[in-house]
Amino acid sequence: MASPNENPWYRRRTYLHFDLPVGQEEARLIAADPKRVASHSFYPLISYDLTTNKLAKSKGPKAFEKKEKIRQIAYAAHIDSHIYSYYASDLAKRYEDFLTKHGLTESVLAFRPLGLSNIDFARAAFADIAARRRCVAVAMDVSKFFDNLNHKMLKAAWAELLGSSDLPADHYAVFKSITKFSRVQRDALFEEFGISSHNPKSARRRICSPSEFRTRVRDMDLVIRNANAFGIPQGSPISAVLSNIYMMDFDIEITKIVIQ
Image 1: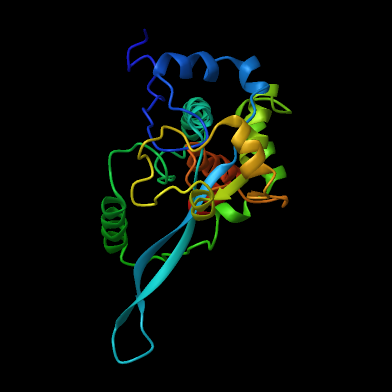
Image 2: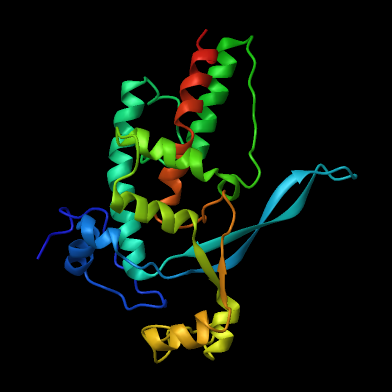
């Protein structure tokens, strides 16, 4: 049996989904086999809306006011998640090599294991601004970034990171599953199978059997497919590193401008 250090990408998952949780060795046998990944059938993601409160400048008498921000979060089936984690780990290593090669290790902060938080990075930025005294600082926020990633551009950047003109069959299978993804709304799914949202794992280890999935989920039109040529789900184990890969050419060009 492999030790945790041999498979750092593996994380034990016990949430309720269309398939059963699997152990580390079974996950490795599937995720590390390109032929099995290339022919793997991915289940739809289960999605739900996550509402968070954020402070924004107020136009009224108060300086700030609370505003709700709604994000759609989607989580993959157990085997699918392990595949995404395995490929995310491989791509992350290649991405770090890319940053080193192009002198970007100090420029790109998001979704990297740097051991610091956004508060630390903000403090360093403010300190640098104060030290320069005269400079221009630009702060921007891209609305619905994950929802609008162009699939062709993502595929090209992915292949570029692999040093190839196209994606190998296994990488293409992962790419296709994360771009042409399907999802099922969690509330509708739980209602169909009489699952309590407060205690979903009560007396069951999976949502349904494969046959029930076909007749009560797929055939009942609960599956929503992404027919767009853009967008990837937010919340999958591979989404974060793909968003960084997508921005590789931009990071190179913006760094050239900044250091001039």
